[in-house]
Image 1: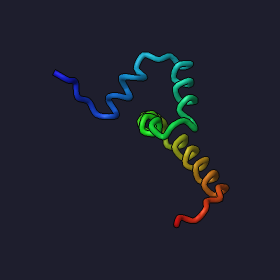
Image 2: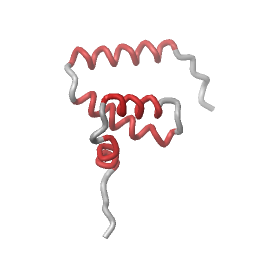
Image 3: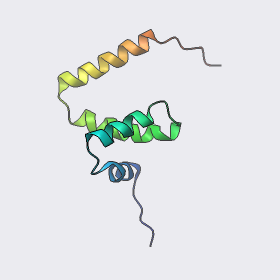
Length: 77
């Protein structure tokens, strides 16, 4: 019988047991990689977000806001 799991479970199984260096390698290897890695990064971000205090959440939102303001996007057609 095949094992069925959702994306969150699959990502958590893949990264479970990795040490800090392994997690950093996974994150850095996913940045600017194929778009298939983005859902995994989303799961990692969700875990981080749920487990940091409000001040750190504000810092992340501030970094994102600053980067979005500094980004010049071409118009969608």
